[in-house]
Image (cartoon, rainbow, N blue to C red; front, side):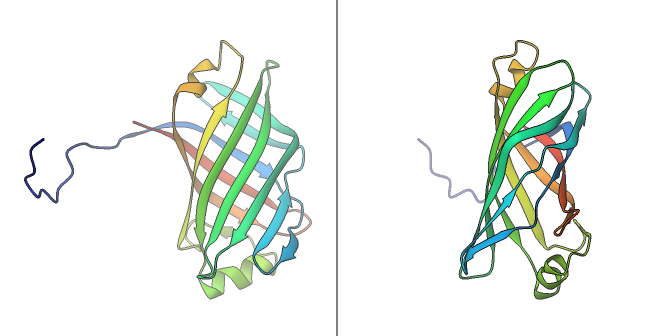
Length: 163
């Protein structure tokens, strides 16, 4: 192994668009100062070049609030495609709000990726469907597009394969 003390990368990361989805969220339930749980309601939609569907039960987000104020996502959900396949999605991620974005989110305002300093997650998928088997074999990243808490709460993501 050669050690050149190289500070530049040896590889590159590329992405490929997979889908956009909207997951309807119930208002978060505060467990204590360090955790909230947001149920994912059935409905919403999943749309992409090779996939279309909706979220069905069960699903939820166990949101840990770190001492720094960053949120750590722990999400599990179930997609039913419009051709009857079931796809399990799970992911972890990080949300770093500003004081202003956290307050606006808690007040039920609609926020976009421009409002929250950092909001990225890394889903993996599991399915027995031959048509969607390709999802079993890739790592993806979610980039938050929109989020809103409250009675009509939801989160919207664009999803990309990382290569």
